[in-house]
Amino acid sequence: MHLKPPTGPAFDVVLVAHVSVAFLGFGACMLTGLHALLGLVRGSEDPVVRRYFRPGTNWAERLLLVVPLFGIALVEMSHHVFSFTQTWVILGIAIWSGAALAAFMILWPAERRLQQQLSPSSGASPEELSSSFKTVLLSSAVTTAAFLTVVVIMFAKPGGPTY
Image 1: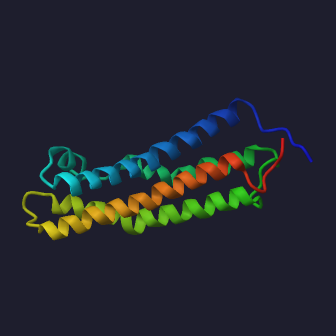
Image 2: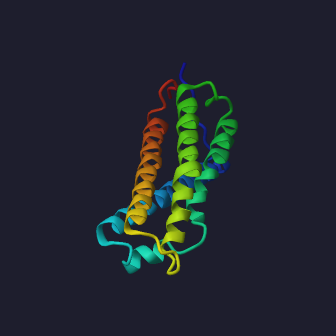
Image 3: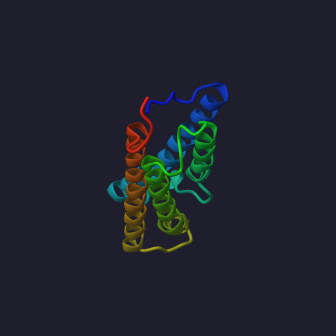
């Protein structure tokens, strides 16, 4: 059965919002990993590394938490063209959940620890800093790989509608 793809201004706005927050949120996670790599290569005294890992919440990364809200809205706005039973939707939600879990449990705590270790009064050893940089780098790589996988799935839509 061939279905007509969902269209309309409201659908398009929500789609742009979904894609934008995904790219911004996961892009920020990727940049965090790249700055951790920079810390491993250049050292913890590098001003770019210190500026990036200054204390505070990286709100751009937290945008990835909004991605499923827009995704759910898109499924609901599709007039039954998309469904929560379709393979591509299930895979997208499952992989996003894994990425969010990695961010919550590994990336963000390691990023906070690194911010504390880079403060002038911390007295963190080079080994502790290196370990934190590696944890941030690897957990960032996991979230980035998950995001890239979901992008491919969203375009391919395995088990989804044919137009």
